[in-house]
Amino acid sequence: MSTFTATGRLYITALIVLLGLLMWDITSRLTDSRAIITQQYEATFQKDASRREGMRDLLARDVQSATQLALYSLSELNEVDTDEARAEILKDAFSSIGFALRNSRYDFFETYLVQETPDGQLLLRGRYPSKAAIEGVSVANTPLFDHVDLAAVELFASSNEIYQVEESALLKITSPQPVLISTRLIFEDDTGLSRWFMVHRVGIADTHKSIDLIGQQMVGGTTPMRIVNVDARTGNCQLVWDVSIGVLDCEGVDLDRGLSYETAFDTEVSRAMTYSVYQPNDAYNALKMPVSESASQWRTAIPLVLALFLLITTAAYMRYRATSTDTLRSFADSLLVKDSVNSSIHDVLSRQLERMSQFAFAMRDGDIPESERRYFDIAISEFMQATLSLNTLRLESPPTSVNQRPAIEKIDLKQLASLGQMVLEVSTIDTPVDAKFLNSDELPETILGYSYSVQTALVAAISVSAETTDDGRIEVSLWTEEVEGFDCLYLRIIDSGLGWGLALDEATAGLPDSDLGAARKAMIACLNHSGTELISQDEGDEQNEYQLRLCNGNPAA
Image 1 (cartoon, rainbow, N blue to C red):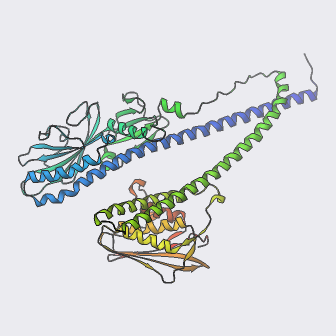
Image 2 (image 1 turned 60 degrees about the vertical axis):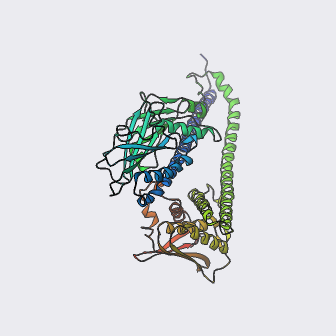
Image 3 (image 1 turned 60 degrees about the horizontal axis):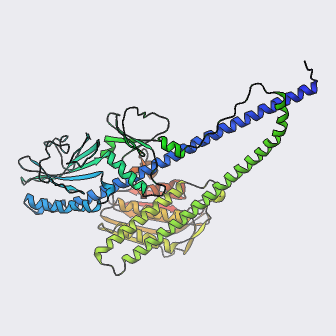
């Protein structure tokens, strides 16, 4: 048996301890790396699922806009006294649905015009956007009215149900799937003539096909994943849709699996009937899941030669630590670059949206027929909504580094006042509101601050006031006051509307983001994340008065 000196035993012990430390360091780094990879994978899936949710909501908004437009002609029905004349008016109005939803991406949706005659017959008078060759037939014993109590139905109240449909020429369903039916009485009077119903049909599987169709037309194509539609009333599976396959059997579906994204539809009708659970499928895991490296298997008994080899690997280990430090430094630098790029993108988009709004406003005031000015008003309104949403994201997502904060700049108050006048005019163009924009005679040319924050607060405040005022007046005033040696901009709004309600940071407590408009979201972001302060709020029966201080260029104000 070999005998080791005290120095030799100490040297061997030191090598074993060093090896243990090395093993601990490598193991902890691998564990942390796997945790980061898992977090990145989950965040990526959340973004992909949210992207698909956005495409679904885009389709829903298009359908909702088309159907609401078709109901604008209901008032004309009171001007005629025969069912046939009313039928022609409704058919002409509903034909706009066929025009607006003529693209194949809207194949998941059909709406029906149904007449209930005085003798109780339910007759199909039209199907949109596709035409029905069976117009005039009775639809009394069909899914369109099986769930409706005709004796208790109320005007504009919806009766909703989900049916499992194998195939139906009336519903234009060619494959088995759950179908959402929403039946609504849209017109009745006391003349003894017919009542008129609007019935919506939404095929759940066809909806997923339409979303996939949109995804195929976008950069990157359709992201593979699995979507489980669940009955909100019972919690049972209604449909399983695999993007790469299609409809799957509900058996074996695990709604409690680790990674999932649950989402409900925007409309109250759909939200009460069904919701969706997004889950990664095998194709998604193969595409997005990083390849995990198998950890090395270390022997329990390490020969003496391994301790000698450890002397060489120590130098490599030190080099690895230095490389790791450089990598972390590069990662930190990349975060700074990301903030800079995001800020630049925001500035470019914000400026372009502002220029497009000003251009549309100038074109609107030019030699344009009165009938076409509304299109410019709509365009300006959309540009303003987009600008508010963009600036809200920037306010709610501050830079990761103090050094990346934007520099305080000079704000042109003349341009700011011009912007406020444009917003006030466009926001009240369709209402009998007397709108006035007042500037102080002593208003300086410029003040210091963050222009995007001040513009957002001004536009959001005017828009919120316009949204809550349908009649009467809105008066907007701008002036400056000195606060601790710093010029601060003040805004006063006087309106005769319903009022903003409670303080904005309290009025929205418990409400989901989908219940807030872009203007209210922007106002909340300004109050929470910039120097904007609501310093007075006086609401009464005759008028409401709000005063805000837009002083984000002075940290002490």
